[in-house]
Amino acid sequence: MTTATTNGRPTVGVFGLTGCSGDQLVVLNCEDQLLELASLLDLRDFTTAASDPDRDTPLDLAFVEGAVVSPRDEATVRRVRERAKCLIAIGSCAVWGGVIALDRLFDRAALLRDIYGDAGAGFNPLPARAVHEVVPVDYAITGCPIEKDEFLSAVSQILQGFPPLAQVNPVCAECRMQEHGCLLLDKGLPCCGAVTLGGCHARCPALGVACIGCRGPAPDINVEGTVAAFVAHGIPLEEARRRLAVFAPLPEPVLAEVA
Image (cartoon, rainbow, N blue to C red):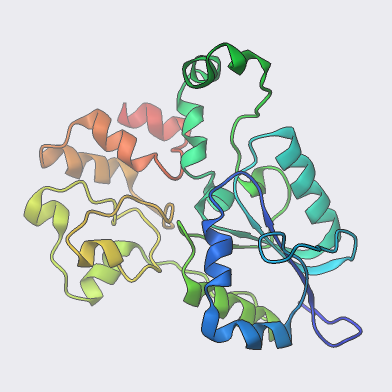
């Protein structure tokens, strides 16, 4: 893709929908690279970092964090899509729906009543959706939050006219490469590394903490096999299904098959 403005730098916006803003903070935490990024990018719209965003200039690149859970979110992301030549979803909420999309598994009216009481009846939230379920997305950088090195690599690739390098290996592969033992097989812990997209350097399993699937599903995952392995190691079926659906809701056919 070609990204060049009259000043030789691509115009960029960073936007947040409903989420924790953790991915935007990762961008700001690129402390050693921020000055170089500022020299390469023409940052126009980034409310978390600037008090005077430019709401109108067309954008070459737009990074969008968070899930779409309200009419305001939907209007925002549609407007961003209209402005941007290239839209990049960042973070598990934007890419997969994230924890917010757990509401798909429950009665929404009951959730609003339980959380907000009588005031819940006056709210008009939408079922949580990933960005790609609302507008076309060009690229995605997953993670909860994203990895700084993945963000910087994606920016570098795009500036050179190439698509960002996509992760394809699961967390389990990173564990193997680092010669960590298997937490599921060795300790019976409900580790989701077999079905979770790598790129985190197996940070949690390296510390003896079971992967919770925060980066979303890897390609060609075997959900049924993973559930069977969980159950074989004493993890109840319902807990196995629940753990696999926290950050990226399982498709209805898969839910039915493992129910």
